[in-house]
Amino acid sequence: MRLIATACLVLALGWLPAAGDVWPSPTTGRDLALTLLEPTPTPADARQPLPVVFYLENLAVPRVGTDGDESILRDLRASGHLVVVLDYAHDPRARVPDLNRDLVALRSQLQHKTLLADRALDANHIFIVPAGCRLARDVVYYRDGQRTLAMDLVYPAHPARPAGAVLEFSCDNTNRMGNFSLDFCTDTILPAAATEGYAVAMADHPVAAPYAGLDAMPDCARKIKAAVRTLRAAGAALALNGRIVPVGFSRGSGMALMLATTAGRDEFDGFGEHPGTDSSVQGAVVMSGRFTYLDLLPGDHMVPRYNQAWGTYADHADIWRAHGALDYLAQPAPPLFLTINAGESPDALHQMEVLRRRLTLLGSPFTYEPEPAARGHRMPLDPAVLIPLFHYLSQRLIVAPEASPASRQDP
Image 1: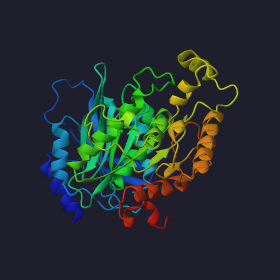
Image 2 (image 1 turned 135 degrees about the vertical axis):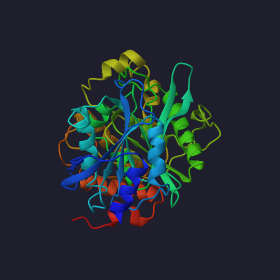
Image 3 (image 1 turned 180 degrees about the vertical axis):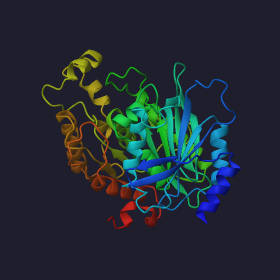
Image 4 (image 1 turned 90 degrees about the horizontal axis):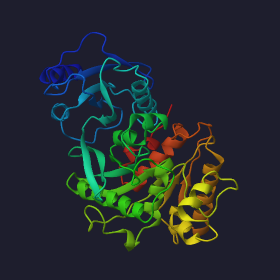
């Protein structure tokens, strides 16, 4: 029956597969059927790099979006995307945490030009979209006259149940979906979350390029809260449930933590788009980064840069304090999920320890799941971290227990 439905779909979309169109999936250990759908209309300039959507069909997790594939694929093509359909044939491994291996492999192969090497692709607009989900690009959340900040949103279309949302601030200050950055950091959280039934949004980092390790406050807090408000306002029209959890890694980690630690701080609200909308978050996933500038290791290589930008700590302690997300925390925050791997820098490991101590002192609830492998400056891939992380998301975003990867027995 599935083969008949697939045949009807490709005929309706005007595409006939050639023999051998497959992709070897590290997750399943077998070749997946790959369908390549050209944008419509065909671009006038064949050399123009194309934005790409990888559309993942027949995953192991129950589909949440109820819109049909035919209309979604037609709309993606009509908006100028080259669509690559991958059919997982309901392989039981095709969900978190196993599926994350494929998400890494797709971006890595594109980066190293071992996948679709004969095509001109826009490396800054490569999206991974589960079946039943739609893509909304360039949703503006803040205008400051010099730079317009926006986000890209993947959401279950007419969801079978209300969906929560995961918000990430990009680690690429020029191109929020820059494939180099996503590949380098092994960033799989958003597309994996989308497969588990959540809406996901990648937002521009509030600091313009070039990034020098300095997050301008209070400007950053105003902008990231505007991103939350925009996502919540957009979600109201998309049958989302209004619950949002930010995720942060590296230069984005302080942004995620800041949203949790500045809850109720009116001085950061009322800016950007949708100024009257609630900017609260229901938790945060905080990975490797800097959270306070009041407790640094001796010899921290960034201190000279901070001295130049803010003045010395001895003379301007109030400025140093104002730049640290952790130093806004005076009462327990929403429950947090913390993780870092053993191969991160001593400075990053120290910052995570300082964060944990402060949360413990305040009685602020958190879950800490370190990744034991020394993987350097990377986001987690170990199932021992991913399973509790996605269980945490299911608790904070009110997703049915059966949709959580932690509720199943892994082989």
